[in-house]
Length: 106
Image (cartoon, rainbow, N blue to C red; front, side, top):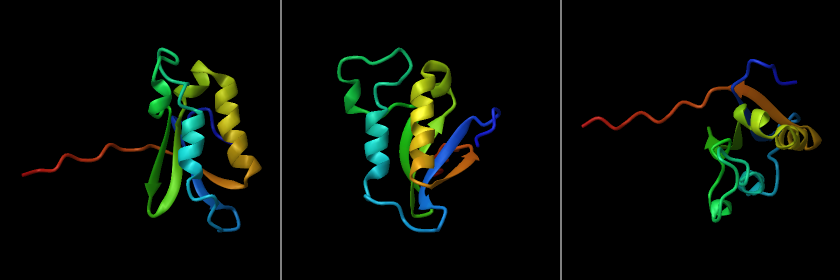
């Protein structure tokens, strides 16, 4: 269950049993399916980049998809889709906040 106060949810590529989820490109595939859901809606060529509301990444060597709460406000069915994907595949969900990379100081 995801709390209503969560701003971001991390879908981790590890099952509750601790096994790595396959295929290895699952995060990119899921984020690719979600690419039309973005601020301002789908635009020509928007399928060529990820939505800012559903971003694949790797954290600590684990493939993840960061899903932002704004997706729910824009398209509740898309929000439900990604959460059901995680539940159906027994993937771990973590409520957290993705911090931007710190600029390199010279």
